[in-house]
Image 1 (cartoon, rainbow, N blue to C red):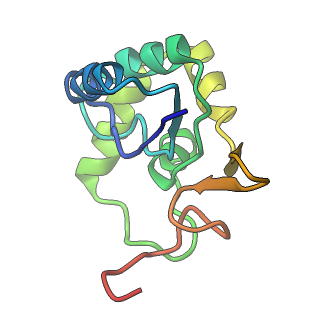
Image 2: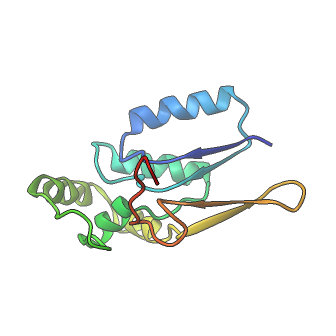
Length: 137
């Protein structure tokens, strides 16, 4: 089975639809989302609707956590006025059910593979969704 690992949709339903079309043509049997699904662009509710329809596992990303809490963990960069304004606007577009759906995102997902192997899926690192991954890491 082909597994697609997607991440960093950031509320962009137009781009997400294009990716989903490609995945369908490629014959992907399973999708897992590595987080940062909602915060950032203009279609947060539409992205959530597609994720619900897919029924794929979704990992909590740092931007998803920020959307829910308004806080940055682990000594990240300070929150800008623009980020706060985007968060407020996106929250105004989401329902309580949407927020409960995001709260259900998990820290890691393990996908069983053939030959007693598995795929550990996470945002940033298995330790924390806020770990910074640099090019030389």
